[in-house]
Image (cartoon, rainbow, N blue to C red; front, side, top):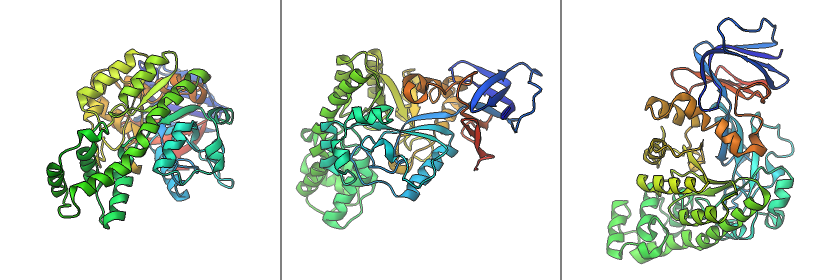
Length: 450
């Protein structure tokens, strides 16, 4: 036998089962047995043993909405790839937070760009999605597109799926639909270029909402007098007149919006035709388009990404999620930076959705590289008694495996025959990861990468 994990509690990932004490047996990368009866452990020698006393064994997390973990074009904007050291940092953070399978949903990279040619593959199983449709590519080029080469521009979803992509999307994004990336990157860049002044993400969000509102409609913008007041509140009084600020923000955000929304229809059609799941940017500006896509393609597997998006008010987030879920969509929430970091976001929308019982899966998204770990959110849900530990863990394991079967159908549950992707966490604080096992191999021991 290759590995035995013993003496810990066990959460199987099915949303119901939590054993106070169990042993898990691993051979050739697969789970070959689970004992839950006291004293019933198999008396067999194992090459390696993990003593999980004081911990809980659970399935490795499956994160189906992340960015920045591959070497190809980044984000739905097709921006230049992240530097190699940044990619390594992001990957290792996910791994140390308990993720064993990760879907990078930037969407416009190729399947062979997960790693550079001479790079050692990462311990995590990292996959890519595809958003290679005309409108999504056009939206990327309008807002950035500097990471796209000829082969990215001419690729098709069929080509990518045949080469290993496991999902479609992300349709839309913070870059092309006026979301977080506009606030922490593109609007601040525009202000720096125009005025030589750095604008904080919080100020960029406030000014963006003042100019075009939560629904990205210039008709919802404030008057010049009120916009001037907003500039003063942001510490930018006297920087420029209201008309110039309005023009800068509108030019940064609006050119890609209609194209990106049209890309929703393309991705939904591809999801229905191919049978692969598709991830969508669910936010105030895009919710109506997503609802229409779900209504038009009820048999497609459409995932409403980060349904706790900060552009929603809490009651609005719940109403839209219930509407989408009732029509057959999968409701995903993301940690963003709303659990412990609180860089730009807070947990009010996440809390509302969990309390309403309308969440199917949880992921991290990116949050400008400042995302909080999935287990931090799970620990919070358990501490607040919103969900049991078994229910909360299923949001990042068994539930995700059922949606993304092409990527994770052989994992996400601790049962005989499944791939041995396992983590051991502290039983008091589920966000403290002790050990990580991927395909039967220990890759993190005592909180340190091996």
